[in-house]
Length: 397
Image (cartoon, rainbow, N blue to C red; front, side, top):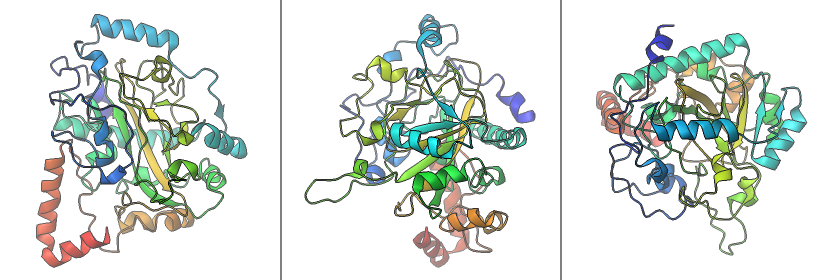
């Protein structure tokens, strides 16, 4: 409860200008990023992950606004979202509708499954989520640092904010890996039980996140090196799947994720925010109750939306790779002791994420919104290990 009390009055920091303090570039024509994790760093310092450097231009639509709950522009948008926001006819299936859930995922690039978490499971992961948000905010009380895709202020990434790059050192995140409500659906989607855990994290939209996050795919890959140019990643079965777990009910105004149905197969360029049609900005996954599971094909176009409420909107996640897919985004970040406590199935699919017995997970347990501080923390651990041991650790990541 202490963490929840800390977060009650968080956000809506009018001193933080729209799009933050960074001098964001304006010359981005679309949001495609075939380079994925190999993306070059931006010329300016933005707190984001490599594969999302293409989103650092921010949201020009709110450039003249004040980050205030009662700003006239905010009030106007809130009223509009109340009327128009949300995917019409959004289907929410039950955990027992395994084949239907998989069919909707393959059709739309996402599917919502109700009651994925029991009340007790939801309470446990929400408590852990609140603790993580409080730790990030302790060093950034104005929420100005930014984070996640595009590094917008009033947003954070659980994984990006962790010095280990993932949250698999936290017991409650590990509990999400193998749920009786989600595992049968994963097996149906991948047509196999041999998929693997790629990582775990999630995202946070603080109250007062007035910006839209540009549509994008989470390219944890570089495009296929097909010399004939006949195929690309969008021609393949699902390579990477994320399950997001909303900690609160997703409403029209508290920053529900938007998903563009069927876009996981589209070859058209992903538009920038300036060129994005209104219907895409309103194509949000809401209303959705807390404790649901949102399965997402990471190729599908998606993006964050403004959180104009007074509530912290957090969605922890777990990432799964198809049996045939691997990525540099996968790294060993789970302590051996956490792995030992998993179910046999969870142990098997987490085998590429676990560290050796007795091995320190460098960076685990340290969350900070700024990459430089996270790197300094890790460097102290590497220095303590000695040069040879540190290099061997890095070689095995």
